[in-house]
Image (cartoon, rainbow, N blue to C red; front, top):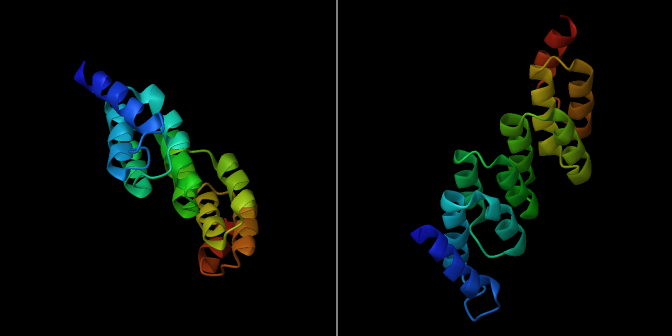
Length: 148
């Protein structure tokens, strides 16, 4: 039960406005311990804390199949290409990926979405996404898919 005791101690230190509240390593330790010992707390920590190693924590969350948590981290820290990648590759929800692309409206995000839509033979949607991305790089794949 040591990990749960560690979580309780870290919560007191990090969440209760102590001098250590902004300490990066303690925030990392709290989130990582929760990933291993009490997954139900991870999303709360991700949303409440701001000074942790976001890309590393998100990748660890992915490797522990905490995809929503990884998406939340990437979205919170505006790593939008990684956020949409989680939606496409791990959560497998192109509708949410489209909604996310509309919200952030970044060309790289639209390109990733277009690529995923093309792989699912959603040719019209892929063309729309590539247009929004202003990305003609996949035109050969689009033409081939449109002719199928």
